[in-house]
Image (cartoon, rainbow, N blue to C red; front, side, top):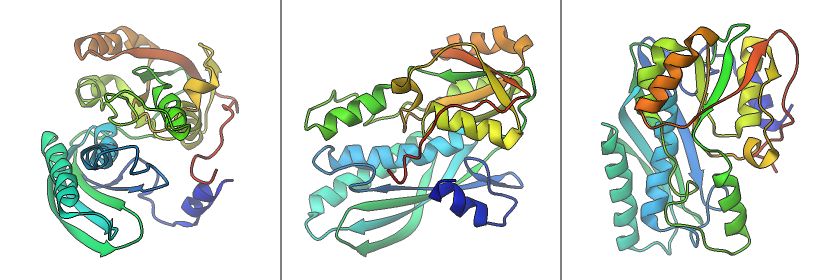
Length: 273
């Protein structure tokens, strides 16, 4: 068991387990975006940092078919950050939140050695999409094209430049797909730790295994921070879900079937490597 999984195992709340904690119709989530952990300042502009920090948090709401309502932002601001950079960062956070109908209503600021952001999100859903609900025989699929985030991160770490529209800079959230496909989906989650690791999580929480229908290489399966969707649904609804994908302009890939075995993908933690 890795350290993240061990920490979660020590928590006693019944609300833990999904992309956000569902309490009645309200959802509560939080994600950190830390300098030298998730990004380096020389890689990204303040606008890119603010936008991605907000998008990775909004992804939790999108993944659960929820509408983001309010956000609380905590910032650790290093001494060498000038007022113009702070304004650019703030503007990107607010504009990105507003695109999804979300308002930043407060938070906290401290002085620190690095630029760290932590965002808490309050969302609402009448029909949330949970991780529990996968049934034997369900098809497992992911949206989009995976692998670019890992590829571009490795390029940045080698000191190379990447495209301005790279998925590493700006994840594409699948709000329209999730909302329209929700009637057909049994379960789902966003892909933040890589398809392999997140598929294992989905199977673990449902006490199921899988039959692999499409071989996936490690460059795709171990690409973290993709923020595409991993979903499960009945095979009889495949055509309906594929139609939703086409209507929403979403690439859609069926890769496995949920079955009663213990098969898992090889996976290593992204958090303590």
